[in-house]
Length: 86
Image (cartoon, rainbow, N blue to C red; front, top):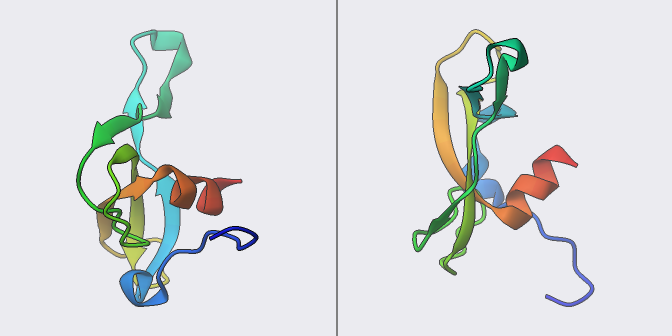
């Protein structure tokens, strides 16, 4: 994939909108919430489909464009996480 920008698979993300990092409560009360920690996983990325083991990040996305729609939790590879949040 040299020279190509990493992109999620359009078929896997069809109907999903408003991607956001999954938040968790900080152990320090004054910090409020922080993004959930990454973790190692041998399972495929929910947005690009790569089955290479590696770091995964929990994110949420709405099913449909409205922010009030139901949210789904996804596991993203590091490349997809960077694609959505940088």
